[in-house]
Image 1 (cartoon, rainbow, N blue to C red):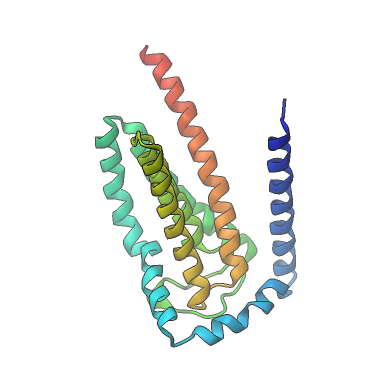
Image 2 (image 1 turned 135 degrees about the vertical axis):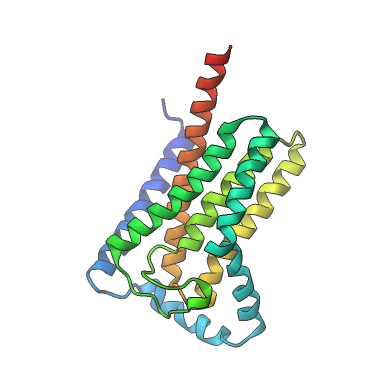
Length: 215
């Protein structure tokens, strides 16, 4: 039985999916999204500023060169910290799968980028932002597993806020350095969050099943 809170969440989730679907329809139809048209001026004004430089460095925390070794290392760190293979497996395979899913969606939508910047992993199609989507999954899972090992409620909140801020900065950096439209980033966050929630649910399900088998 759904309570009032769940109905509100379901309603908002439906609105978000409808909005994303509308964006995809307009992009595939060759139309330029109003949100992106209204937000282009800010990007142009920030070019060659200290803000641009900051975000140019920040975007590297979501790059393939950084995330591949990072994911491999923390797959084993989580395995060791939990004395259990399941957290590391869900983290590693979940992050890898999010990359594949991002490539699949990009191939279906086929949106051109506002600009190409090879040095910042900005090649290929644009929608949704891989940095936003994969960072949401990778750092979101890491935040979730770290929080499970922290007994202090305040420390738990601090960890989640810091990781949320990191994910936001990485995602928005793609818009600031002009290699993605703003809607690419927002869609990346949304797709990434949906996949993240699914992975957490899968982990909880598998972990519960494993505990029953072992008991």
